[in-house]
Amino acid sequence: MRRPRHHPASFAPARRHLLVAGIASLAGVMTPARAQQRYPIRTVRMIVAYPPGQAADLVARLLAQQLSTMWKQSVVVENRGGGMGVPAMMAAKNAAADGHTMVMATTGTLATNQSLLSKLPYRPLDDFAPVSNVIMAPLLLVAHRDFPARSLSEFLTYARKPDSRVAIATPGQGTSQHLTLELFARRAGFGFEHLAYRGSGPAVIDLVAGQVPLMLDSVASSLPHITGGRLRGLAVTSPQRVAQLPDVPTFAEAGFPEVDGMGLAGLVVPAATPPALVQQISADVRRALEEPSLRAAFIARCVIPDPRTPEDFAQLLRSETAKWANVIRQAGIRIEE
Image (cartoon, rainbow, N blue to C red; front, side, top):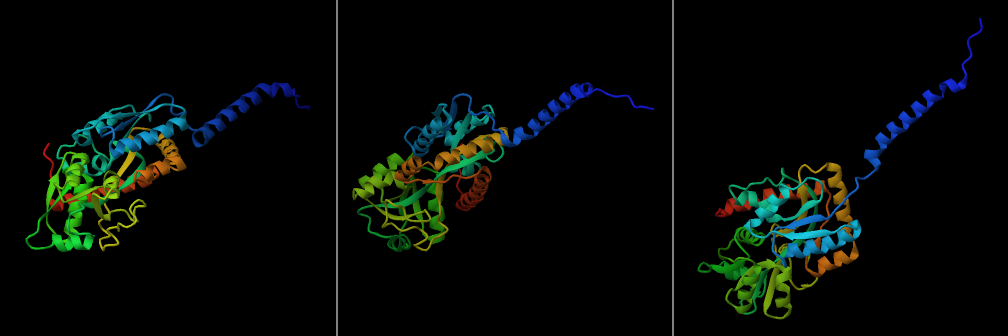
């Protein structure tokens, strides 16, 4: 018996159906792996927890300008100062988790507030997704030019005298400068009188005027007065010496490698932001931070570019949180709310 012959054309619709289905299936496999989400599609808001002119604000504005160029979308810096950064963090926490709102957060808002404040309304490592660190800012023990000690070892000889309780200023209670000072005093074995100012500016003014003998400050705010001969740097907290202060040793060189307090500033977004989008933004931020002109602008302001993957940034935050929680507990520091 002869088998019935089927015209090849009778299979055409089925073939076309299978072909279309196969292409659709392949596209479905390839899209998540190879295609990036279109981002950003509108203006990006970068919240900063400090007033205009402070270090985190200057860093944010430089980075925002670079990202605006890369993304061909505006990146607008929004300053929400005060309240130890809590209002800024809450504004970011409650924003849409679509990558168009981020916050330039710092050591205080991400690592130390939870140990300093008993009723913190956000959880740094749960309510936010780390994107990338941006900079590390070295700190500096700086003295008025008439202070008798001209080196860190001479300072310790002076500060360790039984009747000595040297006054040292910081920009405020619970700041990176204050906590690093507490860490140094415990490791080096000396007592001090803490003069907590409301910001770096007023403290530096009194230091230059001789109303205060010493201060733990950011390098950037003290540098003009050091180069002008009004102040003297004793030691910096960075791993290497600061290029603008080649004669000022690090704390590690002076025998205190554990005194490595550095202020950080990095970007986080609301926790519900899709992980793939977080990775995409992080890659763009890290690419921006490798731009020679931006790196040069940061280094000129005495801060160190520090791009990190989301995973590395999260690890840094966990480490900083644990480290400073121990210092805060030992020193008995508590901020009145």
